[in-house]
Length: 290
Image (cartoon, rainbow, N blue to C red; front, side, top):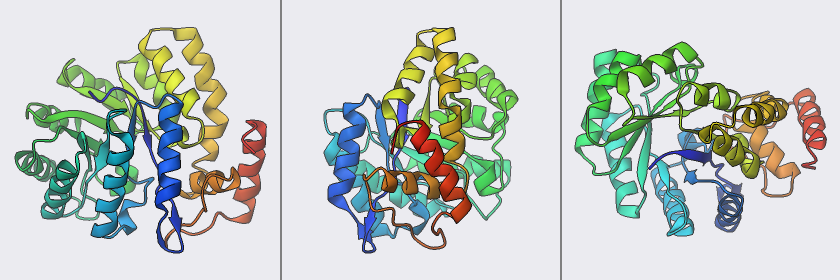
């Protein structure tokens, strides 16, 4: 189910609240330009500063906008296992097609703790679960051995791998087999990871250029090596610019400059610094986005 180009979509705010009309417009544009699925309430969606009502609201908006068109993979992770269960159960009731769960942050669980966390959530929902490993955000790395243990659980079906390690990704693919899907969690590694067996991406860059990201993934899946490689390098400067400061600061700033959203962020995230803003503008002009 979870293959192709998925967008880790931003959550647009206006005057401190979710901007529903803008949110729906963003989703419609993603679908029209070939994105294979929508991921609300992830890191890019500022899930850490959404309260429970807003979290549920965002997922419901996306489910309604995507119904009958593309799958919704709802971010429902937490550093509290009980909270992750509740968020995942709500996503199931709202009609999401799957749940994306980050490794618990701040707690620094052991590998066995990670296993028990995800196994517990899996028992409490019928939704397919996609694991999310991003040690730069959580201070804990989920090892290939732990992923392989979890892959034996029926409704744990995939991983968004963002360790940055091709070796680790290789080991996950080798240990988990063809029935378990690895998705790139880093836009700069979409093509390299697909070359070793990844089946897509959950992308930040798709917020700006969904057609190009979905095309890159399609080329990779079709084994069109030279074309995929060329597009990988074409997107490199834009992708790098979107991580010039903490995600989602640059991508929301870019969408604001493109006139698509009010680039409102929630503290502790704040506006892009002056030097970074000028660099981002320069890259956006180079790609004819502004």
